[in-house]
Length: 136
Image 1 (cartoon, rainbow, N blue to C red):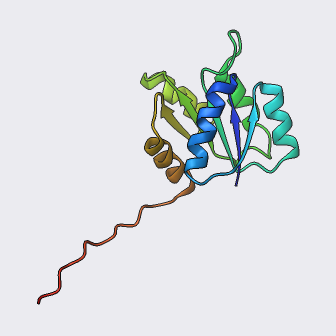
Image 2: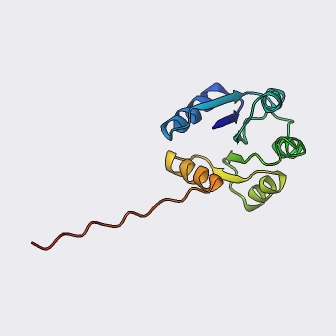
Image 3: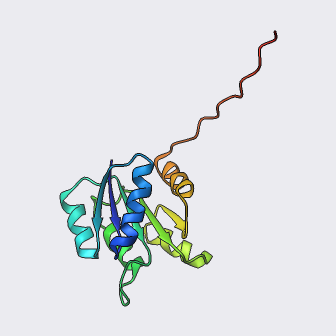
């Protein structure tokens, strides 16, 4: 599974990459600008895009970025996980309307990241029945 992380700083990307690797994902690419992200999308088969909402420099609208890449036929069906510290309902709605598939509130832990990824890919946790003690 190819995952593209779109984030401005390598520090944030490294943390996210480590969390993804701990969850078993290994094909992880990094883009530190909108043009670099678009270039990855043109030449590589991507299964998931993770966008850190605070990654874009001032003056660049994250929602415009999402809307613009969603116009491409190649990107329409790729799930996009938006990570952001903005917790207002309007922010979440705006991100989802712009094309995000899921919205993960920062700061988050590995468990929250896993829940969102499982939700995106339709993975359900199996309930393991408790063992019953056999009568002696």
